[in-house]
Amino acid sequence: MQRTTSGIGTPGGLSGHEAQGHLDQAWRPWVKLLDVALQAAESSAWASAVPELPVRSDAAWPPYAPLLEGASIRIDGRRTRKLVRELIHTADDARDAGAQWSTAMRGRRLDAVGLLHAAIIRDHDAVERIAARAGIDASALAVVAQLAVMPLLHACADRWREHVSSAWTHGYCPVCAAWPALAELRGLERSRRLRCGRCATDWPLPVLQCAYCGEDDHDRLGTLTPEGESQTRRVEVCYTCKGYLKTFTTLRPMVLRTIAMTDLASVDLDLIAQERQYARPSQFAHRLTLTVSRAGARAGELRTPAP
Image (spheres, helix red, strand yellow):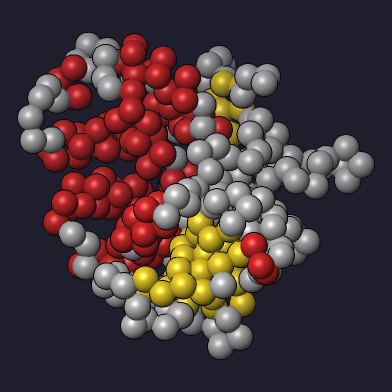
């Protein structure tokens, strides 16, 4: 079922920089933070942290496990701390009032490696502990953590692109387990590709299938289409799980920067869906189990705790 919604005016089909130009001024501080993470993601330096894929036995390895499952990641602690602190300083510059994070952190050590591990597996309790030790706000640090992990995850996805199974049929990312940030209807044939906003992985899913609950009854699926935009931008909704996914028509795959900026520039679509009581899942469908440690370190390895 298709519904038309008026009052949505953000242009569709924008490149990353074009989308950035159409953002409301209120989003400028967030764009500055995002740009720090995206610039880091465009650097080849993070490729050295990409581990070899774990050996997988078809009999023992579950078919729903993303490629990061079981990985052992060793990252440059200095590079990681530099990125996290740059994000924090950028956030400081955007604050209107109140104590700055960088001031509160003087004399305290921020566990940047632990923060990236917590961000990958979405361990909110670990982020809160790290924030408490550093003396900064946990909710704000959680935002920084999700941005800081993008370069590492993007490097993993880039290295492992050929290893993504063509038989992957799940709605979450086959590399890092995140739900898709958006979907593309790509090319003249309009094939549906889901796109991860953390690592830029793309994977197919049938048009008439909910990414979140797998609903494939077309009577239980619908769309919200902005008035006057035809099918260039729309929101796919599921009446079964009340989930929604933004969808864009594109001729070619979006790069990570374009995914991030398009997602941000289309916040009006999020508001339209949320006003109608649709939502995105708050938790990932699969909790990753992996280890993270500093390159060259003999200790300090971080493992995902048992559920």
